[in-house]
Length: 337
Image (cartoon, rainbow, N blue to C red; front, side, top):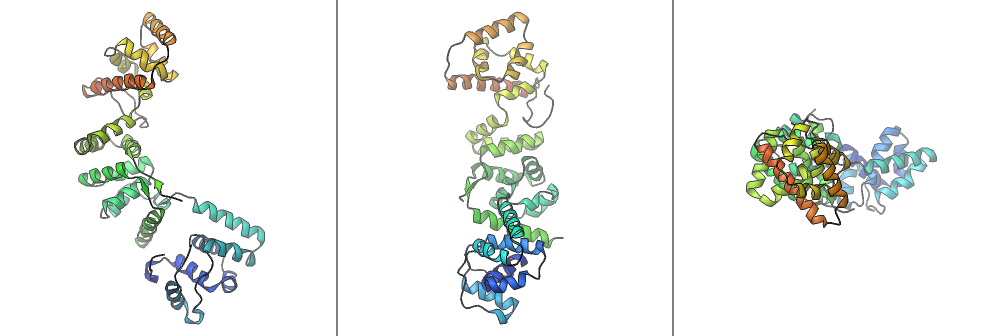
């Protein structure tokens, strides 16, 4: 554990570390005077302590009271400590329930305290942080909230953050916890292995919820800085089966531009909903012939099917630029025309 001073720790964490230094018997006497909620809070903090240096223990004990200074250091991990401690201060059934609740708390997603904070307020609060720190925070938000926070940040900072999210891979859990704790502490004062939290798919999902101007600006930036990354994000933003959301007029416009052989191949792995959408926008005879072609088609390489689908999506994007159809985000809930 890195060197710490008491002024860097939250109150509950300092109390938990002091209890750990005191040992089971002394801590039990203290906990008997606390409420169940206070015991749960301290127990949760204790369960996250794996080790503690003696100098930290001494500093904390001196802060609380010099009468309980310990020279022995800590010989027990926090998780083991509370499992031994709780049954001695409450009924066994209550202790089991509290420990179970603690385990559930430990599994919760980081930055849970940001859930109810207004996106504009959050954006104003974090915009002065390092872009890498902001990228970690935004990656942990749900996609709709992440897009809202992005929209309130300066444009150039939007580009920087999205670029970092797209290349963000495994982040040490200790770093995530540190950022989370510091942010929570600062917000409060205002009134295992690494986790996969970034990548092109995260950027695509965030942009799916952005307004069109913000999304277009960010994609243009990605195109200029990394065209391959921009293309990956574009493909993830709108997949072939998402064509089902285009209205009938838009589907008919699209069908005018597609060769029958290409359409037949592309529909081989398409959803039944999309197939029905296509069939109903063809003449009865054309729909019947297309269904026969699909049923009679032999095995095809997946790469060829996906190539045909991407070719059709390229046509769809061109038609969107020409104003003939609209390709909105796949989860936007907008109507396609």
